[in-house]
Image 1 (cartoon, helix red, strand yellow):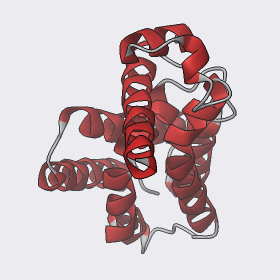
Image 2 (cartoon, helix red, strand yellow):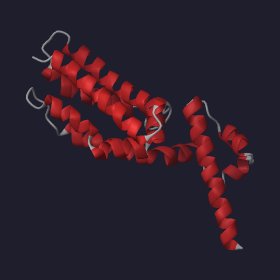
Image 3 (tube, helix red, strand yellow):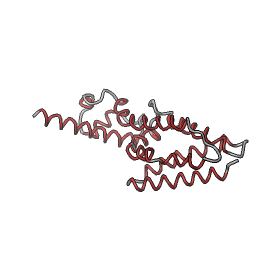
Length: 195
């Protein structure tokens, strides 16, 4: 009997997470309330507190894995040096199996962080990634007067494109193909503006 009760609790917790994820993706963190989540799951708000102490804990349950993966990626890229001779290969590194695996395994957590994290500890993570990618790209560009602006635009486009691929592609093969094409496009753009 105890086993059955535990299974039911686990199923309800899973349902809470799924409905919360759906609402956060749809409405954003700051416009989603615990009452909305409880209503979607057909439980009382007080019953929801048996599973999660607050909205933050629920959001971070959905996003911490993705954020940890992004932080590791940022640290790894921070130490890489892009130069004229390896620029294309360095950007292609963004598509290693490890990165694609992160994008596929943490798809919805990444989408939450990239698009719906306003009001959370992750709200600046997207901008940090853009700044880091722009800083890596800027020294490569020939147009010294506009290199900061161009590098920021290119970094933002790469992240926006990645988000669009994740939002519109379901199957892993489609995600992989979309990301490969995006990085190829991005790399050719950088190569056209090289010193």
